[in-house]
Image (cartoon, rainbow, N blue to C red; front, side, top):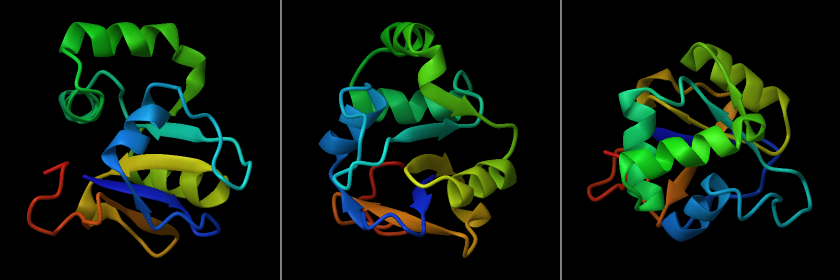
Length: 124
């Protein structure tokens, strides 16, 4: 999985701690003031749950409770293509997508200075 943002977003690298703050709704704006929009495919899918558990360091039931309490805080899309199109068209959007779905409409963000195909990447 890869973290992607719109091309106008200047974020190239994010720490896993800062990414967790975004996902926990503790950080709601980028440094430039734009509102963060979290874009997910099915938030209750095994892949999304795995990502959220790794980043938030919470058990599955706590992740589900967090999602339930913030239903209006994220955008749900049906496919990687829809996710990429939404992120590309909405400054401030951030999403998680399968590596092989990435296109040139978005920018891939490093997590803890690592790209998705680097050894030790958090979301393998």
